[in-house]
Image (cartoon, rainbow, N blue to C red; front, side, top):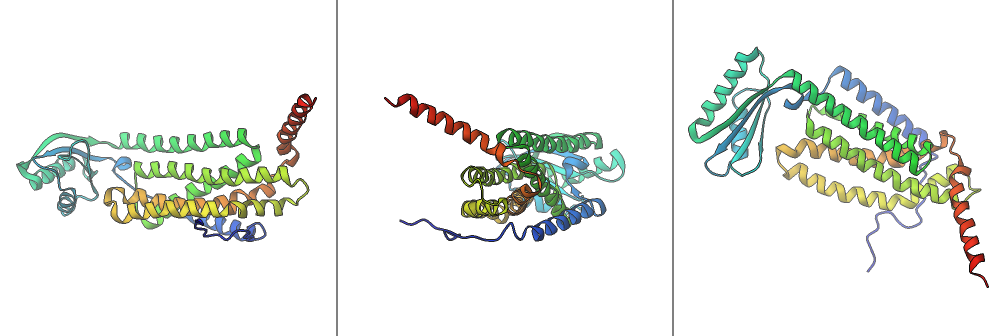
Amino acid sequence: MRGLKLIPAGVNLSFIPKRMIFFGFSVMLIFASLTLFLVKGLNYGIDFQGGILMEVRTENAANIGLMRRQLSSLGLGEVALQEFGAPTDVLIRVQRQEGGEKAQQVAVEKVKALLGDTVDYRRTEFVGPKVSSELFWDGVLAVSLAIFAILIYIWFRFEWQFGLGAIIALTHDVLSTIGIFALMGFEFNLSTVAAILTIAGYSINDTVVVYDRVRENLRKYKKMPLGELLNNAINQTLSRTVMTSLTTLLALLALFYWGGAVIRDFAFAMTWGVVIGTYSSICLAVPLLLYLHLNRSGVMIGDKEDENKKTEAVAEEAP
């Protein structure tokens, strides 16, 4: 039985010759993302803005959708509901109200008046701006440490040129994700930070696959022009890259349309991340190697040592 192939065998698309088009597009995308972030800003969620946290328990399994619609009609701004633990336990988060502590108390009373005595109010907390600020910087630190760890890993596995190319592509993915959230006005919360970290892992996985083929080709074709060699490496891994991205997108689109409001922003971030991560792995990470003074002889040293060891082993086994 023949497998499904979206990319025909032996395809040779011109990625490297068109690299300037890709570079120009990416520069405009990053510029637009930074402009949107600085001018329009992000729609920060309760995690980063602060707000009211209420834990309630219903008599029967909670109808999250109905409760969300009812609470949204109170005019308290952003309201997020999440089931946790048992089906009867619900966590209600309401955005911070203007007007100090008295305004927060008024919001709590409105929620209690709507839900009535049919629920058990187990916990009510106010998340202040200090706590939300700490959460924000913890998120920034998590993303920064992840990118730095990826740089170290790629540096040791390949050469520093590969590590730098991967980090440039990865930073491109993160900034463009922030830009699309600023443009669309979607809520930016801790789930979005988790999505960005997942995007980083997905993107670097795609990049490593192509880089492995580049390194393999450097060992096999020692006299082939670097541009041609890089283009061949992209085309040789293109089918795998496209198939992986499409299968991942099918799952993410299902989450986006049928996963509910709680997970929709996360699914959107991941969907964008898969698309832009696939693009950067093919059109940025590899073409950048042309300008990073890749040491072809350094990549081949390990290969020569392996060949010498094999020759010595054969000589020892010979009678």
